[in-house]
Amino acid sequence: MCDHVIMCRVTAICHTTLFYFTHTRTISRGLAANLNVTAKPRYHGSVTQLIQQTKRCLNEFCLRVLVQTLVISRLDYCNSVLVGLPDCVLKPLSSVLHSAARLIKGVGPRDHITPILRQLHWLPIRARIRFKISLLMYQIFAGLAPIYISDLVTSCSAIPAKQRLRSASKGNLETKRSSKTVGSRAFSLAGPHEWNKLPDRVRQSETISEFKSRLKTHLFAEYYD
Image 1 (cartoon, one colour):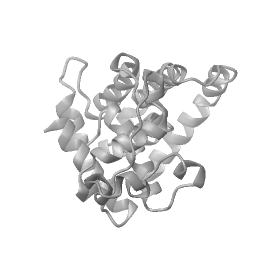
Image 2 (tube, one colour):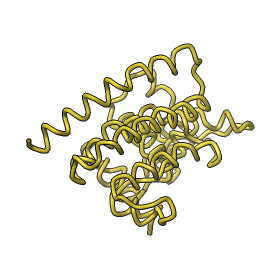
Image 3 (cartoon, helix red, strand yellow):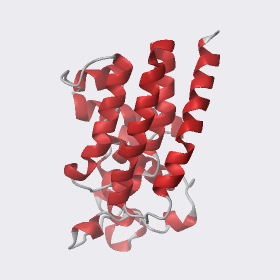
């Protein structure tokens, strides 16, 4: 039996087994950033256990695809709402990411995780959040985002008092300030702040795929080099 068929069957089994878990544990729990952080590790713990049981039937390529499909994709889902949260809150998600990396490479919990993440070319949790925010900002800059999102940010070149500033010629966005920590996590504040930090080579990408590639290279170097 080929690897593709095995991987599809294992994925189907995992999805079926986890159906009741995801629906009975997450319904009627409210929507909050902290809940999002604390609920995901419980789901991913069950997924990891199921994958661990089928690990001997898969090679590393199939195992990696399975983990990325069932674990990593859910870590990245709507993770832009987690921007600005402290490390202590993001720690459960980091633990899930580290467990998934160790599962693929077959290393123990005492092994240093950074070389493993580098080898898999995975960004840490905070970098993944920044990646999502920056991608949304590029969609706004390229005119691909919905109006209700685009209206949340303002270009410096569109403000008469800032049109002659260097920030306007560089394509920067107006950055606002908030006296409260929660307010600084709003997309209208966090988005422009993240966009203005990106180098020109990343921001001037002509396509989304090119932007993603350059952005990941930039963040990878920032966090690992």
